[in-house]
Length: 202
Ligand SMILES: [Zn+2]
Image (cartoon, rainbow, N blue to C red; front, side, top):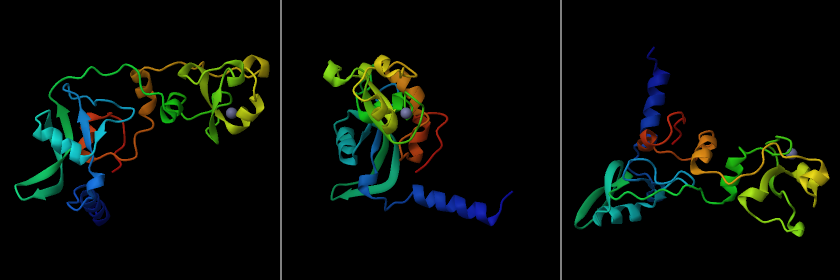
């Protein structure tokens, strides 16, 4: 089972992950709530290294895991925290932020009129000129051709019923979609705190 290629690959992986010269900007800390679940998923709760270290010294967080990268000052050598946990529990918000990414995530990166994953845009279900608002309940992911075809009409006028009616999702509902679309950067030390089924890509 052991062959040179496998050993080399493992060595490359270790080097990539434990690089003590890792750039400081690439050392965000994953922030866990006091119950050791991520403070938020969308966006994933990450703090820059300076904020994380400051919170450590203010005794607001405990260090759960660290990068190999160190920071030095005359009075201190310290490994940069990669996972920290709040000492005081913060009640998580039930609803995710209304952002473009989260809206695509709710719609699983597919046109809600034809299912296409190409040329995605946003469509006001009730057009703005008819008083349609820019809210979770009135915006859908639509491919450019469907958006053009529908134009300034309601779905009924255009004969284009959406596959799923738009709703304001809870964090829990968005998490179900999010497992298929993890963030690009996942440090090895984060994996125990995120989803079971996300492949690790550092
Ligand atoms: Zn479409």
